[in-house]
Image (cartoon, rainbow, N blue to C red; front, side, top):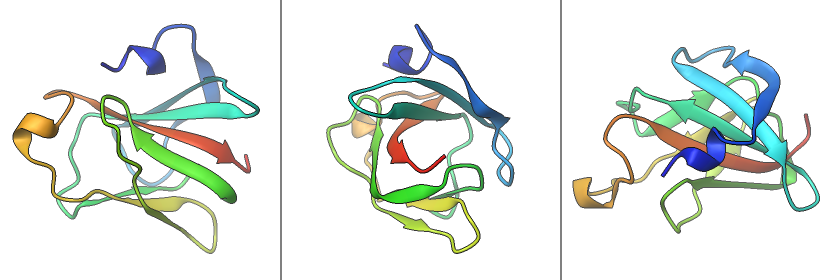
Amino acid sequence: VNGDAIYATKPWKHQNDTITKNVWYTSKKGDGSTDVYALFNTWPKTGVLSLGAPIASFKTHVTMLGMDSTFSFKAKPSGGMDIMIPNISFNEIPSTVAWVFKITHLMN
């Protein structure tokens, strides 16, 4: 389910996140922009994945690989973003060991 974030990707500008450990980044050219993948293996206890490296634009879009829904986020004033993770039932989670947010149309 997470192969899109692994195969035919390159390292992004940041290898790891700047504020949340256990988050790694890859990237690849998408439709008109670079797709950035945030891979994480520790599910956030608060329901928010706080990232320091990505800088959102007004066109930024966040999805999780293996799910059809879009995830909301809040851009941080000093850069970075908080991705809101709603309550997801166990049978809807696409993986049990690692998850990937696909982030498109970033400013950086």
